Length: 205
Image 1 (cartoon, rainbow, N blue to C red):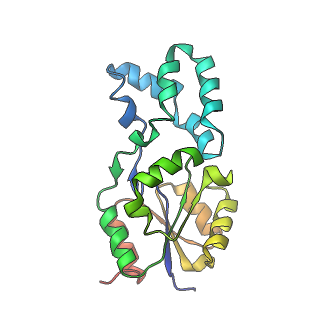
Image 2: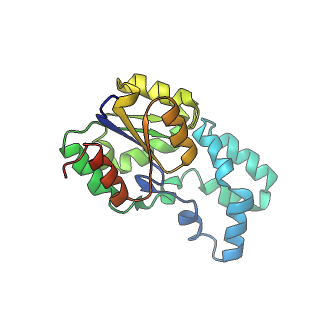
Image 3: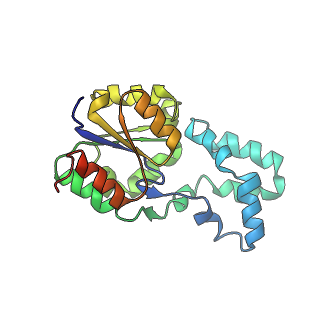
């Protein structure tokens, strides 16, 4: 078995806490109205189109036509998207810094809108500058768990599948990574991940 040599991270809900509620709870005061808006209108399923490469201008126009009474709120999703990501998951900043300091090559494969990624990447440059490369689904127009995005990333990163430890919070993404030969770890929290990476020899005891 190939010895793992590099760590490939997911971004949302692994490195960074992501939830549209972080933005809209500041804009919609009534909890029932907030729940209904996120459940029925600006859903995560609707947002997945951005991860797959569709422009926000198109998706927001379609959604606003279907829900004109919510058009003003829908319009804020794109320009204020970074507010849906308030900060890093607990302990993950320190873990990234420790891996980088130990000389472990860091990469990422993220389901993320290409147009939303740029401003967020710039805001979080102190972390992402430690990464050697990042594959963004919206730019590639392919999304996890499609095996194609893992093959693309491995080729671009110059890694054999067995050299890559892949960390993601979703079981379907982990299963797909395992199927292409990567060593998938489903994210629970930073202390658990630290122990798993230590067991693989990627962090000192």
